[in-house]
Image (cartoon, rainbow, N blue to C red; front, side):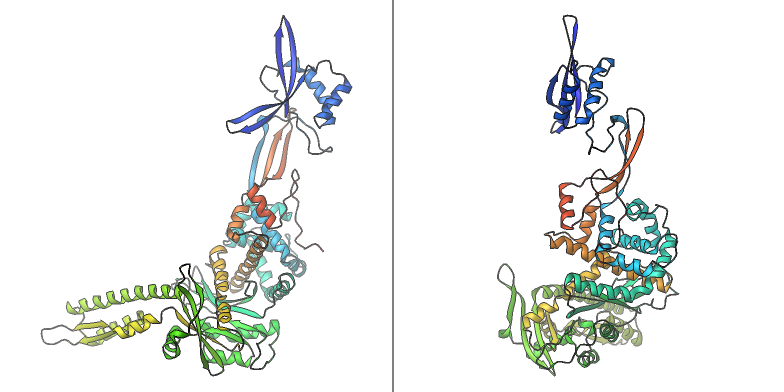
Length: 622
């Protein structure tokens, strides 16, 4: 608000009247709105000025109001124009009261605040900040290693990239103010040193997270979901023992890779991870996993054949072998596994009865989507068939695509033979063997015959689809077989336990797409391990961010939350007083209503309005 003077000339005399005006934004643009007519103020006494200032809500401004009126004849009082100087209401009685020029107001150096602030808060709430301070406070460095670790973790969550790029990114955020550091304090060398210090703490970190999950989030670790994935290297990775070429889940067979297995609870809370050689087979990782579980949770006790085991492992078909099943039995684990597709189809044809399906899920039109039936035992294990309409649609699409390519390859080979470009019988069989290897999943659908060359006639190829085999395989599309030693759970309960493996898939999806665990650029083995460790810790923060949000009614993903919070900036407000003084104030932007609701769901409180942000403590308050 400001005082506006109206000047009226009448009969050779000048009359000055004063109005209290405020600036408002309307649908037609910025407009001035009259708050009150104050009349002629030139004859006001001291008591009247004090009374007026009190009514305006700023008693201490009485003397400045009086001086403004008394000096009004010196200019700035043209009719219909506001004065150059505004009277600003102070936020509190102790703040200085200064007039500012509008043409001297500016906003400089805006930096991301909301997303990194949330990252540090999750780092603190998980107890990781406190753990790192306890474990690394004795290391002597110019910049404390726990603070460098906090910057790396925040970077892997908010803007995941290499350590070199992170060193360039973090000064563009408010991390320096939030951690009480200079914006030049951390470079890539300090980050590499931090990786070297943090990697040896892996066991202590996993033990800490296990305890936190139990105490803070009620995780019981009775059911553990386990699966394996991989990430690849950019470059030769020649000095890294575990970097090898193997089955690439990232569709990069040209790159060396490292495999890692992750175990989580059904809620997605991570209990730990292990890294393996890039060419390891899934089933070869189980023995090390059980040893890790025994160290972390203690070996499960033996129970009777009619009792539920106290610890259950749920795994996909890649880990199912006779040796692994026997290993789980001897270690007294409960298990729920899915058989290979071909084996599931075999049991479906052997024992599946159409009339025995129990419908668990229907679509809106009433058509069955998920059906189960228990078909008996195989030794001490129960066998449960599952028929899924969604899986059937997916497998049919795969079969159609592979069958189309198989037909095209067979026709191309047939044309090559007819043109006489492939004559030697040995080479013909070699090429046919390569086709069989490429299309091994559907090769038994076709019958192939080679007609040897005769005088004047080149060799030829004759093939046909075996309709009976194709039809039998089509009927088994969408059918898979569950194997378990759990004695009491119903087929419906077993299916629900099995589909929880989608939680592990979501962990890998977050690690690879949201947290950018791939590719790896490091050329030292320990730093590769540290890179994976910080990616794992970033997932802990990601999980905690989503949990806090959804526990208070939110529905956004972790990545959408961070994108929204990035709109909250820290910047420098530049002000110029009427006396020529320059003021520079660091302030956090005010959130919109939508952002304020997100902050509420995360239980985050921004620095007090009008106050400069102060460094955070990374230790949880008692």
